[in-house]
Image 1: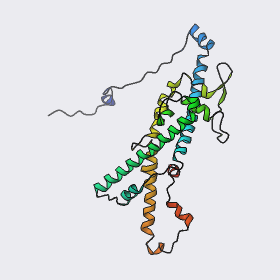
Image 2: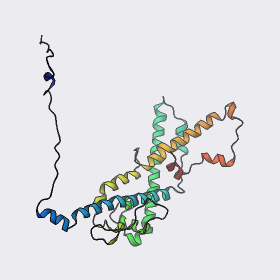
Image 3: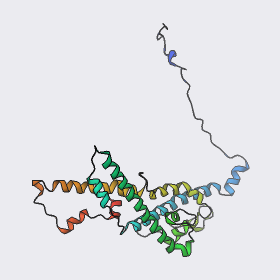
Image 4: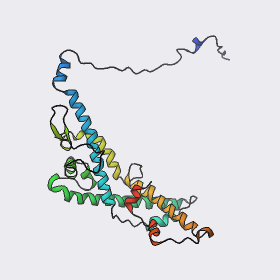
Length: 262
């Protein structure tokens, strides 16, 4: 049998495992390099591009918010089959669960169709100036989407104090410039940002999708509240409760509101 190792000193516990360390280095310009960086305002240019990047993202988010609100305003979805599937749900019955998930999927796809329809309406609306080439929600992510921003936000929204100024003073030359025009030729900076926003319009069961939030989260919660009311209104302590017409509207679905409440 192997002989047990006995403790003699703390030295027995050192140098037993490899340790990985990350070395960090700093690039410092020397000689004429530092002068050239100052002469060409390279650091100021990078800082200006970074500032513009964060500011223009704010306006793209405003654009998506406006688009989604317009698309959902007055949107009508037939959720009768969904409602039937919801009220038939049985945790012990896989068939009812599969049927419910299928109805959720159908409504998510229908909602994305509504987004595509609204996007095509926007294409007709903006095409005189923007020259949009793609169709559906893809118009929000194509190269000429900056033209949509310029039309929608010619200046800072007066009702949004957090919005960056559209006109700004360039740190490089002190000239007044337009934020929404500053990314012409630099749209690759927005590639990752646009991809994350494109997830808004997915019909998949994923947290980043608007359809998922409206259908899988809020509509499900709405139906659950309605079910609880239906179950309880027959109980003795609730039988005397009469809802007025205004209160009955609680159970009417308005899809923009399904996007908002949490």
